[in-house]
Length: 291
Image 1 (cartoon, rainbow, N blue to C red):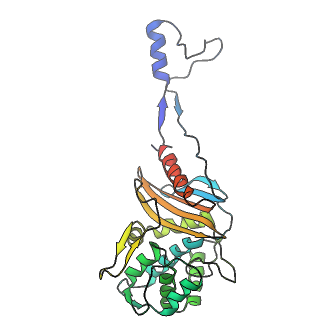
Image 2: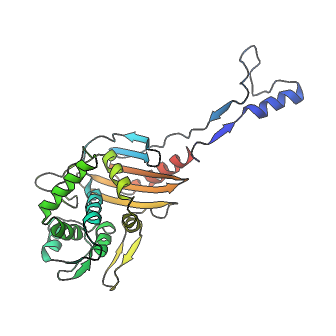
C-alpha cells in the first residue's frame, strides 16, 4: 500500500519488561542505545529493474515522480503520437460528425507500412467510431482521415498538434504527422516525461478514458471489429493508454492505472523486446502500489 509502515519498537519493549532480559534482537545498552518510544521504520520495496531507453512513472494524483530513467531525453515515440491526435479531435469535433473514408486515407497507411483499422474507401463513419479505430488497432488510416478533415488538411492538423504541445507545456515534443510513422523529413520526437503529462491530461476526458480502456469494439452497423493492442487492460485498475513501435522508436508503451486512490501513469520508450514492455509495466504498477 502507499506509505505502509512497520512498527518494531513496542513488541521488543514488551519482551524486556516481562522477562527482565534484553531482547536478543536488541544490542546491550553499552553497545547501542535502545530505540526511542514510538519509533517506526519505513518499508520501501526495492525499485524494479526496467528496460527501454527511457522509462518514467508518475503519481498523477500527487504529482510525484516515482521513477525517472532518461525521462527528459528526446526520442521518437511512434504511435504514442495518436494520443495527441485523439486529444485534439475530442476538443474540436462533434462525436456524431460523419466522415467519409477516402482512398488516400487507406493508401497512406499501406504505402507507409502502417497499422490499419482496415477502413474501406467510401464508408462513412462517425468521429466516435474513428476514435476507436485510431486508438485500439492503432489505425494510421483513421489518423489520416481525422487529420485531413480537422486540419483542414494533414499539414494544418500537424500545426495544431505542435501548437497544442506548446500550450500544454510539452516543450520537448515535435510532431511531423498525426500517426507517428517515420517520414523522409524525420520522425519527430518527444520525451517520456512529456508523454506522461499528455496522457494525464487526455485521461481527464471521460470519452478518451472510455475509448482507450476498451479491450475491443464493434461498430453499430457491425461492419468493423477492432481489438486493442494494449495487453495491460486485464490488470487491476488499468485504464489504457497506447502502444507504439517503429524501427527508430523501438517498442513503446503509455500505460495507466487507478490504484489505492492514486492514478499512476507510466511511459516506456525504446524497448528492444516487444513482450517485455508488459512485464516492466506490471512490475512498476505493483511496486508503486506497495510504496
